[in-house]
Length: 398
Image 1 (cartoon, rainbow, N blue to C red):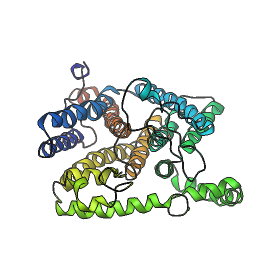
Image 2 (cartoon, helix red, strand yellow):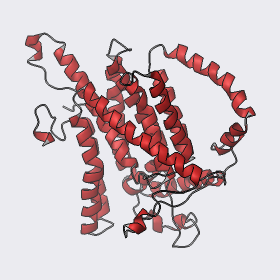
Image 3 (cartoon, rainbow, N blue to C red):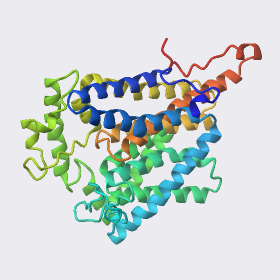
Image 4 (cartoon, one colour):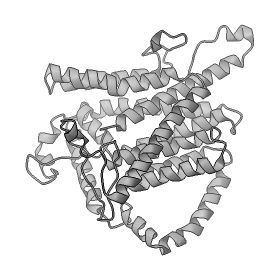
């Protein structure tokens, strides 16, 4: 078992462990007050452990070297590249390959519906169950992809993979992941070597390419899809704004521990899609969902979990002298992807693969601390190394 291997940090030793365990415990207690004991055990204990804590724990403890990261991220990218091909096929043929799988297996699944955006094209989903979930997966893969540049020596093959990921993101027509991917790229450039020169180059390139894009028929369609700027399905943006306003007002009535009964409140009825009690409410905002269910206390624990990891990654990168090294590049992609994820989940609920991915990436961030600590320990004199214990970038609480 992983926990019995030498050098594996026990659960609860790190600050990030404490945040996530406290968050799950609070979720269990609050859900127990609003549901049955059996249902609470199923969702707040079993599902939270299997779907959320376990990916974080395995990712944070199993990655012990740069080679482990190369193999893990390469496996992820290859799997996502297969999904890009499926997504492009679905968009072109207007056929969701997995939409009828639940009926074939005799299952009831509320996802996998045919969705379009502005009548332009079908929004691809592949096996994720929703176009936003697929766009989110593509954005995360896009953010992690630069780390594999040294693992793929053939520049043409690497560039082809990058283009495939971009095609996969386009096939989803999901605006939140698009903006999140752009944010990942900007953060990646800003944290890299000589950021000012690279940002100026990007600005000049944008000045050159933007008029060409706007003059093309594709540019007009792309602008139309953008939130606030475009005119395609802007009602979804308005709906989320109204939902956020109502959600905040309801949450402030129970600010510390939230309101599990939000969906039954009078304020929520006007937001039900299709109207009436049988309509659906798409929260479309992970932070709002956590705030309503767990209050500001739960939201603080959730945010604190990611903030401690982001601070640890940034501090570790800053202590590295060589900004051209592969170890620094790994910190760059993990930091930029986590920042992008924290933006994307502002536009989507934590359902399907979304929480699995962000808890896994957070675990990879913790594993990065361990590699930095081991590098620091092995660089000390032998007599000092013997007395070194694992202190992952100020992540340990005394």
